[in-house]
Image (cartoon, rainbow, N blue to C red; front, side):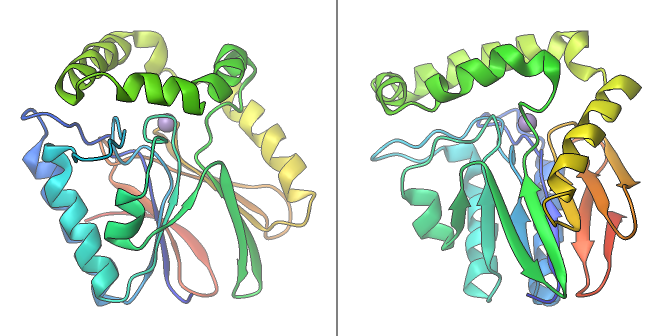
Length: 242
Ligand SMILES: [Mn+2]
């Protein structure tokens, strides 16, 4: 694992409204990962809603899925860390892209550094309600109930809920206090011996050095910032896609 790319929060939508430009920028990024023989970590919420059925796949994600398959066929190892919007997998995505899936977080060591990678949802104090709900929304029984709904109808409901949540200004605020809370959470993890913590979810790219060589990185998003984390084998950087 020499060159590692970390990307999250493209929130692609399963709808004809999907921004084709955003999708094609992402595909160019994937081409770069292929050309540079990188390893790819999708750190959650690549899709605004990923919910697998037994016999159908979401049509408007097809281009992105094919780009990821092409990457995999060209030797790119794909790793997926679940986000809060795309945590409902069966075996399709996994098999199609030969990805490794991680439900909450993944940790590994490379280039003499210990990495801890997670989407970053449920960290804040104000996420208490969500933390309680999380086991329920990922629960097999709930998921099977949702799966009984026709995919077109489920998708429509999700589109409505999602546009309501996007329209809520509270969901777009990222305060200094929130950043401090995340830092306190990160310090506890770094104390366990990790060097680098990589998160997404907050849609705000930032890097914090929390002690000698210890880094907390929020990799931003692919809606507004088009940023990603990049490890060249020695150093971790936050990069802006040209
Ligand atoms: Mn998220």
